[in-house]
Image (cartoon, rainbow, N blue to C red; front, side, top):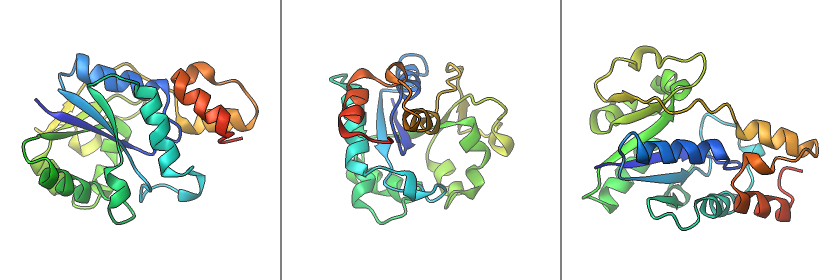
Length: 190
């Protein structure tokens, strides 16, 4: 049974992330899911990110005490920017008995060839793909290591939530309650 790695900035974590993690456990058959909070995705602008420890705290607040999902700060200790291939090598060394798989949206899979050493990632790891409107996975859609799932379409994004909060809109049901409460307390994204 595999441990699914759900990489992201989680800026902020929202109910869509939680639904996907739950689906990967309950329906797709992963043993556990780790939310790997990325300090800096090399393909994204860093200026919009709140500090990594706050994003990890919100992830852990969102998870609560559910034992099959955990937040991970593994990339906080690795050189920046974060490259998945380096994180995977570090995790395999630290947890040699675990089999790690990636969880990603079809949009990310479609641009997967831009990732550092993506061929090596595909050699050693399965990728569980959730649907995204308008994306079919591109050249990787028929790869033997790529598993498409029927996870619910979640058209909620952290970008949307941040924009609404900046406009003083109430987003309480778009985020897990504990994460939302912390975000409000800290006045993030306002």
